Image (tube, rainbow, N blue to C red; front, side):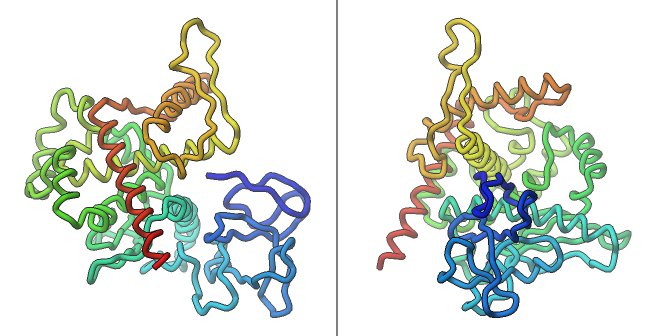
Length: 359
């Protein structure tokens, strides 16, 4: 994630800010520019222009701004009611239940970060497949209708109990997971959507199978085996997580989510000008000066050279605060190959889309 600055007073801003805490300026995010901007009222009621573009495009807030869950802008000239992130919602929680609004807000914060990254990567938010639209259902469970988080034909379902920190931590412990977050859920589930989108040719699927395994294995039987027998011994040498060992599709989704974690975290480190220089002898491999924009870096290995020193540093900082490791993973050589495959596939997709736009 980038850091932003108020054009009115220079105050540093977070991605989610709606007002500048220093000067009070109204703020909105323009997804096509990946820019958080200060706004001034335009002639039409409810419309704004960017403060340093008084003759520029008129903007209005996404309709979910009135619910306090979105700060994204849409051009006044367009008919769309919702921004690119909120337009993906098929079902939101019943807001007549008081606790649901705060949970939905937390989910939207995570989803907007997800969509920010997808836009920066140049990935499509629309499906090229028939009857396969990318949509989200955010559902509350009840005694008669439990909700399973998952993906099916472009529809991503999320149990809103995952937005409750206590419930999510209880589930994390039950599942013996080192890490469980809303953003992690969304990045995992959307990985299933992009498997369908990006691996449509036999050539790509053959390359996938060489690394991840054959996805034609019965999915239900594989999951049952995973939950009944547990994770294979030595799984760390092949998979990024224990759950990734369940089936090639889950391996892909876990690795995809991990790649998005890496890219967004590296961008944050990049814009903050982070350098890591351990005060120990002969430790060149633990040093880095993160100068590359990860969304524009062609070679995955260059990113990973920055990633290892950065994660060693942030884990050490967390331990100094008595917190668990921020990054509780070990990337084995096999996993590195899978991450490189995803990186190259995304870059190839981005180039293909850019060529189409020029036609």
